[in-house]
Length: 464
Image (cartoon, rainbow, N blue to C red; front, top):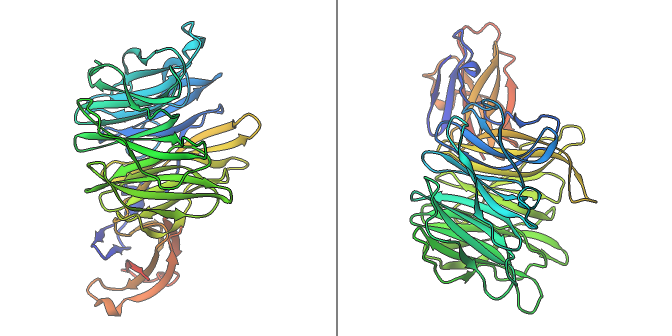
């Protein structure tokens, strides 16, 4: 089965004996298990080494707080057994450093080391899933350290976390070499004399962008602030990103295109919450004004990645599911909102994470039964999914013969399937067989007129 792809359409010849679907290394939009072992397992972070993935997982048999990892093959699904770190803590985060992966997490050191508060720990893991050395403390200062995040760039990791060693709460960071050595001591990233919480971090060029929620001095709400951290630890002046206070605080998401950072956060007001965004230059200058991205379902917990042309944004929709939307580099929407993971019984998609590996998005989805009384899941399984980039041409997969096929395209876009007995037929001579919307990235179609046709060509084109 041959497939020819151009920038405007894909052409499929449906006469040769091999099925195209069996030759595809990656099946887009097909979810696969990451951690589904009948215990409470959670994951919102993964990293890619160019060939395979490592998902940072919390939870194992008999211990919902176990820190673990799971290798994922490039075609989807677990590769080998779950990797046990033999520590307990909160949900871990992962990054790849060119040679090894690094996991960081809020470690329940008080249960293991005689302490009274959580610390920040790390563990290196090689590409084969083996532990490199042992778990090590990144920060074990007095007071509570929690909610770490991690990024890698220019041969160094930056871990950031919320730190309550003194009052008010601040955001601290530490640079970690790829060999595990520390590049200097811990340092304060955000301490404006007011509580700073919920950090995030991303990398561009020779510096990291760290964001945090900072309480207003009059107590009326929270603002999103940012600061650039160079790979030598030098800090820029802190700058305010949001322009209106949010009644509640929470994580912001940040990613970078070829020119600017895009920062997205949930702004909570009396009438509900919306997602807002703002462009930030690579030198730390806020560009233009903040803009509203979505106004429904009380969104929170956004996450974001860039595929070389556009962003993919995801967010939690008021504990009722997870929604996604492509955004242009300017922040303007590209197509409509869509969902990827479906509920399984009473388990609803809640919390997610994603990354872009240069060819595909890898998306993590947690299917959970949420307990609002204790603020956590009673049931949680982790699934994964691959999504093409926003600029990938449409693709037709033959599922069964004579001509039952699936179109894979950009979610939210309209596509027409055309048919012809000859590939040489001028485009105006191809017959439109179906028009449909790839609401979740794909749809199926059967050509009932294919029976008796020895050769049949199909084309998928994007239409208004």
